[in-house]
Image (cartoon, rainbow, N blue to C red):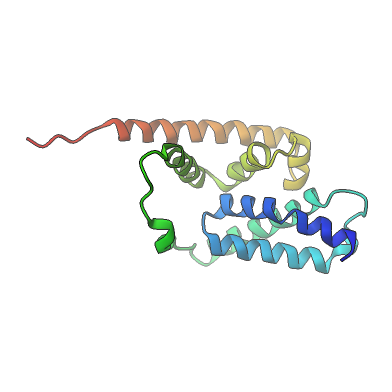
Length: 172
């Protein structure tokens, strides 16, 4: 296996993490990663050897995601499928951190896709603002604005959710 293919394969875990955070559907995320890898391997000559393929791969994935969102809007959107049996199993109470993580992921899904991609690129994948702006094909100022608005939106959603959790129904 040549070095370029090995470098691309090394990025698969990050691509899967990003796709799952974007889509919250394991199968759809795996399809997005596969589409990304197929496109990357078909166009390997457009990647400059010596550079890390990370930005290049995330750029491909972002474009595929945007295309999918546009297609879904034209065709009436997608339906959220119920969790698989293995995913729907109850977890022990000591996994409170997992509940918080799920609430954050749910809140991420509630914000606008442009803001979600900006937040994920910087906060989860660790891209610098300049790198994330390049991957997303937007000016750095636009990226910073999307991150700020996304954080505000997340904060509002999570605060509202925490108030709802604090309310108890008491039967007499």
